[in-house]
Image (cartoon, rainbow, N blue to C red; front, side, top):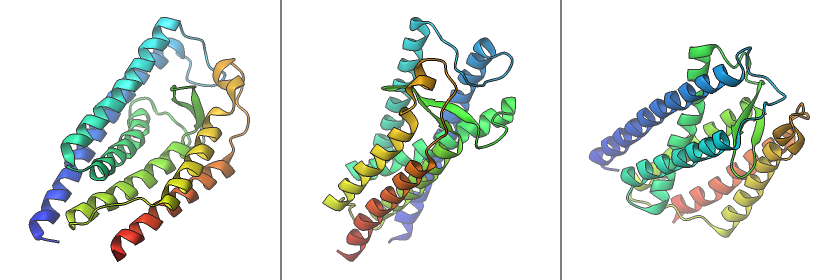
Length: 219
């Protein structure tokens, strides 16, 4: 790897991280306002109903957040999987710093085991804060390693095994977040979180990435 390539990829990662940290603050600021309106006594389950209009606005905000991350990743990378690497770096940093900024601004969450509404598309995702934080950490590590491959002049090529384990892992994690429709949609207290499915998903992700990464290094 040339020294100029090292500097360029490190600089791009630094810019991507800075962008994601700032995005995390914007996201946290919006949630601070929403909680002041709907949960003035402090956020907790069961969830409160919001109007269809505000729900549509929230869905649009989340969709636009994904567009912003996608566009930033497209500008940072030149090839599909390199751009994917930047995307997961920024997604992970954004998600972690969203909670960092909530902690700084309103002192929430008191614990990483407190529950939150994580996402709304296609159904509300709910779970303890530690779950998205661990997933985000895996995303950041994976993204940095992928981007580093391209800085070394290599190309990341997912294998069939990679796709299989990635799909299994994604299914397990999504199920852990979206299975409790009563708590998500019907204003009930959530059932105990299935940490076993989170662990299964993280292990599958690790196997999926490591298989392709090792193949790339040996080719």
